[in-house]
Image 1 (tube, rainbow, N blue to C red):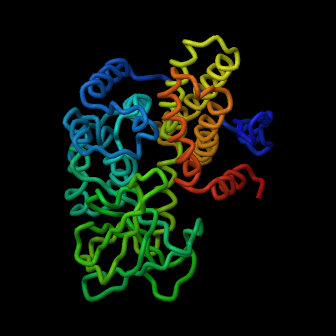
Image 2 (cartoon, rainbow, N blue to C red):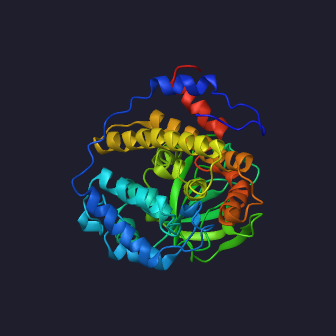
Length: 398
């Protein structure tokens, strides 16, 4: 994949990315027989209840609409792969992929349930005790319970192992104290899965555990972080003597690092890693259809080809997950290359489109919005530096 350096300068492919592409094994995808029917179902839902504002259709997996999430739950399009015992529908990973691809391509407002459906629900099913699973998982599948992830902390940056939020035992309970930051969706979430230090005096990856914290628990305070577009997606979350029952511990005490890093792998390969700017690409296609500029036509062709390649890579990871394989390296590669792609689109559009043209009004609005927010795309799910370190280890380069 390629990255914009400056206006007018030729984009060049980086050597580590070439090495990663050489090791990525894509495959023909055996899409399920239900794919066409599912696509039609999603498109009908979006047509009736989706987002109309073209700017809000960009980066749509951060845009919450709880009512739309409940519509998806009613339609059986959340918790699709989960056991029916916990409100799921026992459908395949590729069926779920079809649904989320359609939602993101349409710019549907899926931000409310996104984290819960993508990773919190599966994590609870894998590691949660029966009380946690029965309390939260069916409600997620209905589109009625939303989740946030408690990882980043002030002063930690990308150094996740330096977390200082603590959990200490008090009889049969745990007491949580500390702070999380950049917590997406905390203000609308019903619970958080937080990584905290449960062993006093421990350092780095040792002594960490995960806890399921109801956001309405006494002692939990959420404060908004407003971004430069005026949007409220991020939050600070404070814990002051938050008491949790003993079975709020998720998984095994002391294995929080292993659990959290495995959880991150769930979020790195999905179509959201290259479709955040798809609303802009679609507006570009519409605008280019009214123009004769060869540069516009070339840009449309180039972006379409790169999107198709990323789709094949992402879907290949989904197919491997469906077979029970662990394509962690491939997932991380998709995340890095996808972020580079979706970050480059607004810069490339800005470089070739005459925004003084009245016909480009919608295109200009979407592009300017993404120019402001796209620098954050490579932060979520792990910064580029962290992700490339993981890739380098997987390739045997470090």
